[in-house]
Image 1 (cartoon, helix red, strand yellow):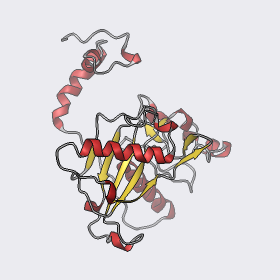
Image 2 (image 1 turned 45 degrees about the vertical axis):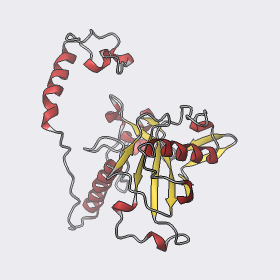
Image 3 (image 1 turned 120 degrees about the vertical axis):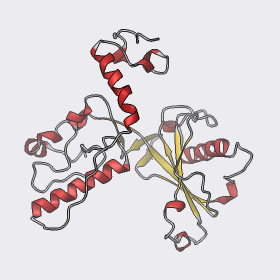
Image 4 (image 1 turned 90 degrees about the horizontal axis):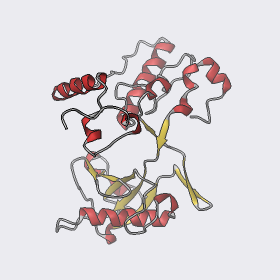
Length: 265
């Protein structure tokens, strides 16, 4: 999008002028096409002690009406999609950052890490001979020994909201549907992109004078159990104290270094 927003667009819609202030990172992945479906979990698998910060999801369970045998050579029965969220850490096996690996090395490291973490319970879920083929996201391009990612992921940071445009812009025929758009979801996920698309569709219907039913926009609901902790945090912040987690050794950001220690620790 940064490459598309020129001076004229910024003049017509000033809220597009701050996109370069948003922080991004990489979260691109690999798909493993298997000849035997492996349902690892009813949802995402998060491998929290993997240096490349891998998350995975077995796809077939959510697409029960899709016959995978109709695709490719007919031998595929399952798809395992894996995200690499840290491209700047040495892998346990290849001992290189993902950015410094070849495509073959990335795929091999990811597969070996998956086997190490998912076959460690005594039951072997992933076997080498089950892999029909693999596919690294084509948003990642390897050229002259380095990688370029054409689909960086928005990283929510304090104050970034003011740099993000709405789905419906002041340009009569410009509507945005992506995870960096202002939404109630407010985090870079497919759900946020979906909400942005709903808002964009509603804007198109409004601009065209259509009487069609509008897409529903959902408010973001947080569990009420978090509210007391949020109130405590707000009060501590007003008094100049840092968040308790920053003083417990779990995390400490530069912006909190000059704040008073949490009084209860």
